[in-house]
Amino acid sequence: MSYFLQLAAYDLAARAETALYFADAGMTSKPDDSPANTYFDGRLSVPCSYDATVFADGVTGGVSDGGFGEIEMVSPEGGLDVLAGYAVDGRRFELRRGEDRFDTAVTIMSGVVESLELGWDTVVVNIRSRKAELETPIQTTLYAGTNSGPEGVEGTADDLQGKEKPLAFGPCDNITLTCVNTSLLIFQAHDGRLRAVRAVRDKGMPLTATRDYATLADLQAATFTAGQYATCLALGLIRLWTSPAGDVTADVDGDVLDGVYVADAAGIVERILRTRAGWTEADFSAADLAALTAANAAEVCLFVGAGDSLDIDAALDTLLTSIGAWWVPNRHNVIRFGILAAPVGPPKRRLSEVEILDSDSIEWLPAHDDAGGVPYWRTKLNGQKNWSKQSASSLAGGVSDEARAWLAEEWRTVTAEDASVRTVHPLAPELERDSLLRSAAACQAEADRLQALHGVWRTRLRVPFFPDEVEDLDFGDVVELVMDRFGLAAGKLFVVIGLNVDRQNEVTELELYG
Image (tube, rainbow, N blue to C red; front, side, top):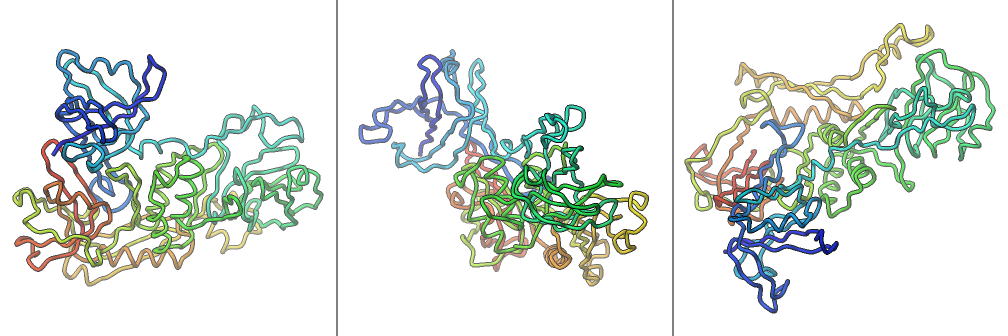
């Protein structure tokens, strides 16, 4: 079996797009191959490595880790110095494995090149992780600071110029509004169309809604009275009639695009990927996101205040962690999504010691976060986020005791526990997580789910296989592992949460959780 590498490139001399072809042994493609009659330079020495897990640092919640490594080619006596005349960064690569034909060889990895390193004897092709592409601000639209008196909603050079405009997704409670026109007391909640403004408060005291205006001009011309507010949902704007006594906050239902409002975690993630990252279904699994919505359609909220910077990848981490979900680029650099849950059959594959490369290299890993593998006896979930925590001194005297108590806390906490766990495991710890889930019922349901998942003994293994035996497996797939060790003689179901593909040494390690 041979390896074939196709690199998309830009020929700097010809000023044209082209493709470069390499293999682990030099060959010329056949006339009926595609591409036909093309020489594949036999320079490929280290096919691309790949190592990723759905959660970083061996935990079972939060940020995924890893991705592509690099491709190495030999260049004795500067045989590949000609590559200095090509640009490959930001362009696609495709690694295939097969017999003597490129067009029938199986694509085993694909993605985007980050850079090319020309060395004395080698050339290294660094592969860009799709996650790295999302290490960019979710908001790139800044206030221009061009207001002139009552005209404009861009602030001035003295207050808002150069600051990011706010963004709201889903039902966000008690967000701090940004005054974008001090003459007309116009505030902004979201850079775009809002679904609704449910409440506006000044120092915690509710103001009275009047009506919504379709345009900025109509909002500017509106008349109403003290203690009231008007909106322009199309622009995410709220106008007061009299100067506020303190901080102005609001409860809003956030971003609407082409008439569509989304409020579940997967829906907001897809909205961000499409509108903020400019991605399409070629870049991520829309089917995975649909499955997430089916699994948990509860409302979540995300607010990024004016002048705040939040990267897209961090936004996705926060949203997906809220429902116990993960996201990670697979071997074809497509982002996959899933919820960590106990595996349920039927399994995609049944794996035994026949497929295992070296049983002596199997690793037993802790299956629970920061607990040495010990189950948790209690789960605390912080949710129902108050986006503007307010002290008693910042509130008006007329604010009710109930409202004061709510506004004073950033989170509401629910718990799920199983005291019997401590009977078996006296050192069983507690698990605590933050979530952007909005309702108490949704928070309790997620806490119950997490406790059921982490309140029992779980097994996590890293198992080496012959690469061809597990080539069809991906993140989230369920497999059955049968072997004479670790109580697995009768077989046990696992979910794939990690992949380490080492094509140089012909081994693929699966990280399994069950």
